[in-house]
Amino acid sequence: MTATTTHTIGDRVIETTVPVGAHYAEGTILDPNGPLASGADAHADADADAVVLDETVAPLAPWSARLLAGQTLTIVDVGGNQSADFLVYNAQDTLERYSTPDTLAWQQNAYLRQGSILRSNLGRPLMTVTGNEIDRQDTIGGACSKESNTLRYGFHTEHQHGCRENFLAEAARHGLGARDLVSNINWFMNVPVEADGTLGIVDGMSAPGKRVALRAEMDVLVIVSNCPQMNNPCNDFNCTPLRMIVTSPALATKENHA
Amino acid sequence: MTSIADDHQTDSVLAARADARAQAVRTADYMPYRPASTSPVVPDGVDRNSLVWAETVAPGGYTHRVIARGTRLRLDDPTGSACAHVILYNALETNERLNVADTIKIPWQAYLGTGHPLLSGDGRALATITADTSGRHDTFCGTSTDESATARYGSAAPEGPSPSGRSRFLLAAAKHGLSGRDLPPSVSFFQGVHVEADGGLTFTGSAGEGTHVELVAELPLLVLIVNVPHPLDPSNDYLVGPLRVHAWPGAPTLPGDPQFTATPEVNRAYLNSIDYAEARGL
Image (tube, rainbow over all chains, first blue to last red; front, side, top):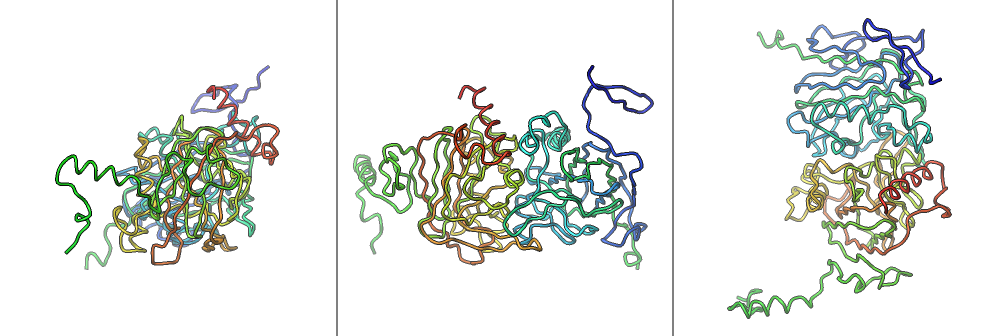
C-alpha cells in the first residue's frame, strides 16, 4: 500500500500519495514579530512607516513581490533557523540581477551583515541590509535542488521538493527561467568557511522572530523560496513559515511641513 | 613625415590584395595557432599532432570554444600575472552551466585544486581539475564589471586599456547566441583569494610564473575564458599577463579511475554526467 498523508487545504481535508515534505512539528515556537524599520531595535519605529504588504510564506513554498525604490522588506524568521533562499532583480530590466561575486568583491567579505550592499551583475546597488539580527548571513551556500540533492545525499532524495523548483516556478510567473537563476542569498542560514577552505551548512544562529531588513535602492523584483530541504540543518529539519513585510517610509515628516 | 602607409603599396586592388596576403606570415605575441599543432609552446608530454586548440590570449582578451567530452584543457600562466576567468556550459543545452555555489558546497571545499569538480546546477560534473601547479584560484569574487573597472582604472571601454571581465564575457557569449542572461558567476584561476576567520577576503595573488591548470571535460562543453585582472588585484594599473590555452582529446572520468570514487559526492556527479551522456548517445 502506497503511503499517504493528510492535509488541510482551506475547508477541505485530503489524503495524498504525493511525498510532500515535512512541516513543522507540533509545539514549535513561532514568533511573527513585526517590521524591522530603519535598522531599529525589535518592535520599535514601525509606526513611522506604512505597511504596504504583509504576507506569510507557508513552509516549503515560493513567494515573490515587487518593491519600489526606498521601500523596505522585513523578512521574519518566524520559527527560527528557517532558510529564506533569496534572489533579487532590477524590476525594470531583469537582465540586471543579484550577483554574489560582485557583492562579495565590493565589500571584500564573504558574509552579509548590517550595511552590506546587495550588488547586481553590473556592480550597482539593488538593496542594502538596513537591519539584521543575525551575526552573519550566507550568500555562498547556494540553493538546494533535486539535482544537487542527488550529489549531497544520494539518489533517493531526487523526488524531494527543493529551492530550485520554487525559484523556477516563481520566476516563471515573471517571465524568467533557468537562465535567470544565479547564486543566491540564504537569509538565516549559517555557512562558515574554515581556514583550509572547508565549508558547509551547519546549525543556524537564528531564533524565532529574528529578522533582516532590506531597503530597495531601485525598483526590484524579489523571489524567495522558503527552503524545503530536510537533509541538512538549514532549517533545523523543521520547516517553518516566513513573514514578509514591505514598508514605505513615512511620506510626511515635521521637517517636510516646516 | 613617415607613416605605416609608407610601408604598403595599396594603390590598386591587386596591389592591396598582394599587400594583405603578404601579412599572413607574421606572428604576434597573442594569437591562435592554426593548425594547433604549430603551437610554439606545446605542453610537456603532449603530442603536438593531437592538439585541437592552441592559443595565447592577450592581456584583456578572451577566447571561447566548444570542446568534446573527454577533452583535456590546459591553461598556462607563463608570466605569473594571468588571471583566467572561466564559465562552462553544457554545449548541448546551454541552460546547464557552471554553478559556483554548488561547485564549492557539494565538495565541502571553497578552494579549487586537483580533483575538484566544476559542477552545473543540474547535479552533473561539467569538468574536473586534473592538474594544478598554482593553487591560487578564486570562487568568491567573480570577474570585473564596467562599474568596478571604471572605479579602479577610470575606464572600462571595450576598445580601451582596461576592459572589464563581464564585457568580455558578453562578447564571447554573444558569439554562441547567448546574452547577459546567460552569464552566471565565474571562477578564476592563477590569482588567489583567502577567506579570513571574520569572512574577510584577502587577495593572495599569484604563485609565480610558469604554473598551469588542467581540466577534463566531463560533458561536451562551451568554454568561455576571459583574461583580465582579478577584481581584488590591488594595483591601480591593469597589468594582467598573457594566458596560454591548449586542448587535446582524452577520456572523461570513468569507472576504474581513482578520481571516479574520490568522494561520494563527486562519484554521484560522475554517475549523473555519464547517465546524461549515455542517454544522449555520446
